[in-house]
Image 1: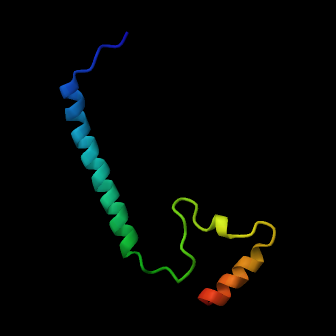
Image 2: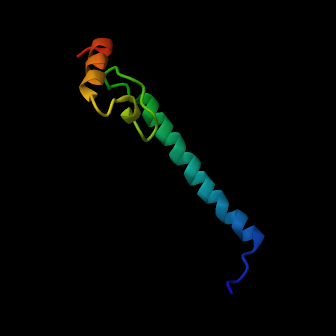
Image 3: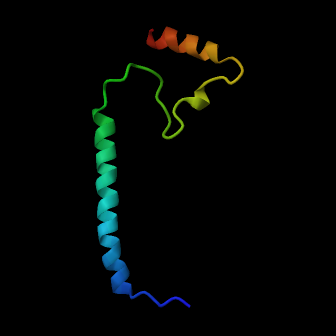
Length: 72
């Protein structure tokens, strides 16, 4: 059986972990907001991008529509 962890120790361990998580999230958001070098296009979903917006059987039709909307 594993020894019980003191509640104060768990709180003390969670403080630096939460600080690291918040700092990483802030950096990710700041980097994403400052990245304006991409050309115009459809708004992607997080982690999936635009994969759900593309027709699986005829993807060239989606690309042609995007070209007409956003330019080449």
